[in-house]
Length: 70
Image 1 (cartoon, helix red, strand yellow):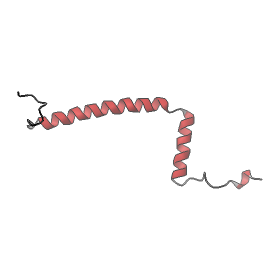
Image 2: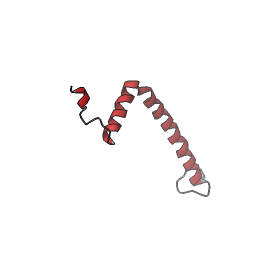
Image 3: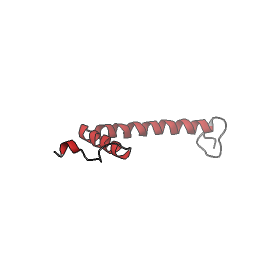
Image 4: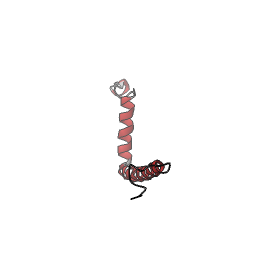
């Protein structure tokens, strides 16, 4: 039984075959997930995400705006 996919039989090419297979599978999954996320992001959701990021990283959204209180 001399197959390239037997875990105990990893020569100089055995490890690289698994690496390339993992790279291809990971790239395909990333492409599918990224496309699904891209279709879900509408402009109003993008604005909400930007507002949340500004709030987390020290934006001015939490401070009162005194010019609007007059």
